[in-house]
Image (cartoon, rainbow, N blue to C red; front, top):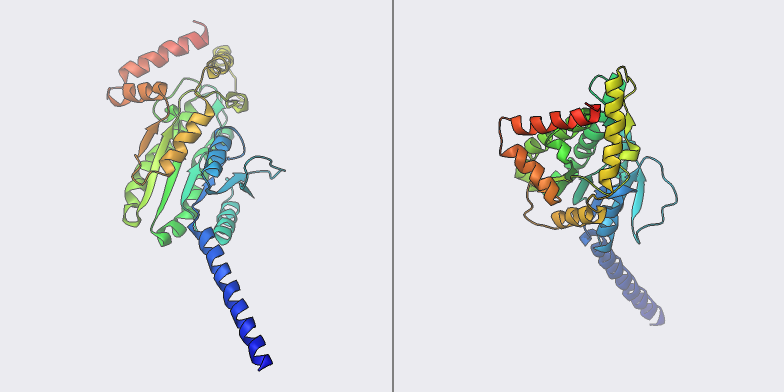
Length: 301
């Protein structure tokens, strides 16, 4: 009789533990998961912190893993966005740990500064490998998960440079325009699986983006040198009055939490004005005239 009582007690304990584990698993799987590329600094860091404050399961990529100290529950995964195997391994790790992937924010990127004749082909390839192909690698790696879930949201951080190209930032603009064109087609292609695609278009931002720009190595004409030097100086000055990164972070998170998001979002009045100037004037002559005038000031004419 005593042994029977012990067996019943053990059975009850086992059932309690099983119920506890199931509840814990349900709590984990019910928590929405987001991946932010380039999420350890700049706009990406702001985005990741706000997602964390909103109680998301947050993962951020970094090329180099260090002792990160921001965010209560933010997890870091080492990724080289120019390497297919590295991206695939990172996505597999996230899915294995979280059991789902609801939102991907493709934020990683950098600028290549200089006239069209000033950059080497290698520099241009590197620009696209991170800004454009890097985003595609991530998207292709996460889509099988999202299609299986029959839900998901891909948010691509573009720029007003994805709408019009500033002289001296042509290759950066080309990478963002490519991302926007790809996103337009992708949004329609993924509609059968209820997977959303959105583009975020910031304008001037108060951050250190300009400091991290790569300069074209083929400064073969004095005018090109003037353009590069004066553009960098102008951009550094303008960023002081640029939009705060936290504002962009809040917009991105609100887009992720919107069940019926727009395809395109401008993050400021400046960004909206630029988009309006481009989209409402099909010939492009007015914007082209503005950019020619801006080039003259950069050349010192």
